[in-house]
Every structure is written in C-alpha cells, then in structure tokens.
Amino acid sequence: MVRAVITEVNKIRCLFLYENDRLAECHPLDGDAALRIGSIYIGRVEKVVKNIQSAFIRLDKEHAGYLPLNDKQAVILNRKLPKGLPSIAEGDLILVQVEQEPQKMKQAKVTGNISLSGDYTAIDLSEGSVGVSKKIKNKERGNELRRMAADYQKYGVVFRTACKEVDNAIILAELQDLEGQLDKILSRALYEKRTGMLYEGVSEYLAILEEYGITRLDEIKTDLQDVYDAVIRRYGTEKAVFYEEEYPLAKLLSLETELSHILNKKVWLKSGGFLVIEPTEAMVVIDVNSGKSIGTKNKDAHILKLNLEAAREITRQLRLRNLSGIIMIDFINMCTEEDQQQVVQCLEQGLKKDKIPGYFIEITKLGVFELTRKKVRRPIHEVILQYPEL
Image (cartoon, rainbow, N blue to C red; front, side, top):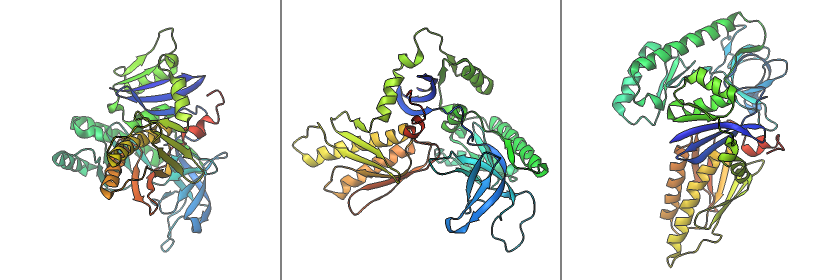
C-alpha cells in the first residue's frame, strides 16, 4: 500500500509518503514559499554572464532567478531574435518557468521550456517531440502512445507511467485540456508588457503528490480541513481520508521520532553496522561502518552482505533526506571487482525507485563510489533550520 500523510508536527506542516508502511519521503512544507515550482513568469533579462553560461532574470520586484544558456531557447516576447545572435540579450522580456527552489546562496533556477503536467501526460514547448516513460516496458503500448501523439505536434508530449493501462480516451481528454491551458498562457504572454507571474504553480504539497504520481497513491490522509478540501477539489473523494480521532495523527505515527531519526547523521543497519551521513557545502559524504555487525567464517561474503544492506539503505536515505548533488560513499573495502559490481547494481536498483533522477558515476581510484542526484528541492536539514520547533 502506498499512502500520503499530511499533518502538523510541532505546528509545522509536513507531508510524509509511505511505501508498504515504511516511510519513503518526508517534506516539511514551506507555506510562505515565495516562488512555487511550476509557476510561469514574464521575466526581464538583467545580465548575461557567458563565462558561467547563465542569464539572470528579474521575475518581479522581489524575486529573480537564473537561466542556464544551454537550456532550450526561451520565448522572447518583445522582439524577434536577429539572425546571428546566438542567445537572449540583456533587456529582453522572456517567458520562463520556475524549475528549482532557491538553495542557500543560489537563486531559483528557471527554464525557458514551459511545461504543464497532468496525471497521465505532460506537454512542453519542444515542438513535435514525444517521450514515453521508461517504466512502460511493453513496446506495443509504447508505440500506441507515440501514434496517439501524432495529432499533438504543436507541443512536445510525454506519456507518464500511469498511461500503462488507462483508457486512451482519458489520456486524450487530458492532453486536450493541457493544450488549451498552455495556449491561453502563451496568448496572454504576448499581450503583457511587464514582468510578473502569469500562472501560479499549485500548493507545495499538491505539487509533490503530482510529481510522485497520484495514480500510485492508494490513500491521502490528513487531519487538516483546508488540505482535505483542496485534495477533494482536485482529485475527488476516492483517495482522500480525513482523520477525526482525538489522539493526534502525528503522535499516532510517531512523526516527531521519525524526524529526529532523519536529522541524525548516524543510521543503524539491522546487521549492527551503521552509516554516517555528512552533508557538506560541496557534496554529501557517506561512510559505511561494520559497527556491531558480527561476521561469519567467510569474511568476504560478510563484507559483501553488509555493503549490500548499506547500499539499499543509502538510496532510501537519499530520498528520505532529499540529498542531492555529488554523493561520495566509502563502503567497507571489497576484495573483488565482482563484489563491487554487485554493490553498484544494488545502488542503481535503489535509484530507479526515486522520482528524482539519480545516477551511479564511477568508483574512484581510492575505491570511493560516486553518485549524483538532481537538485530540485532543498534537503530536509536545510529546511528545518528555519523551524527551531522541529
């Protein structure tokens, strides 16, 4: 069973995702977030910095973002791009969408490839492109979906995992709705003469649920009336559950304890070994220790078993703590390349369960395993710094 729980822990709203009754993700919600992921703005190019291949964009009076110049060319609203000019120029009015939250000293990241997503599909400005979720393994179904996109060459189309078995008529209806929404946004942008927001992204908890995939959820439980009402308005009553018991939901699920475990740098393994997880300014460093783990006569087999257990827990902790960027892991030394490859495969299998892209990079000359995970939202330890109550 897969379920979401939205409640308050020490007066701070949090969203918890459980897979088979085990906590998989935790998201403290910033109700005062100034820039919502998915919001669309008319921005003004303030500065183009070629040596870092980025442009800084003024979104409104209070907020700015940065746009990578290797991103898809943004729609320029105030002029046509002259031949020979390879990119946007300072002073241009362009259409951008918030892609990543501000992180530490970095501004929010924006993209010029405007997109809208639904339960089954997403569309963007990549005219004529068609993508099908890699999790749809049936080639015949994949080809059927690609043929369906033939009538939507105006925009790029991505078919999400939920398309695997749903009726085609439902998918087409959603595509038509998304196309109409994007048409209106682009039409309005052409008539606006100043910077500002054109389209506001959904509330943070709704955005997280939709990124995860509403169709994957069996239940969305909350004891907050406004959240329950919003879930019903958007998704209907089928999955929404309102908790009305006197005993607090956060206490029932021991959520304060769960949060304290997430913030602890030490993570114990069932075998008696443990991980030490240290987020630093430049990267995340993880050390695997044998701890109280008792070995067998076959030392190499015991080390491999412990490292495999650690690899499974590491990929879980990356999701749970929302750690991203460069991730360096120092496993217990293994004697054979075959054992190392088993650990690599275990890491890759764990990363596939994550909706945020993550990849194994290499084993360095010093035997350190290097991963990377895309930055989208701030890690939990950074968010919680705002809330001394937690």
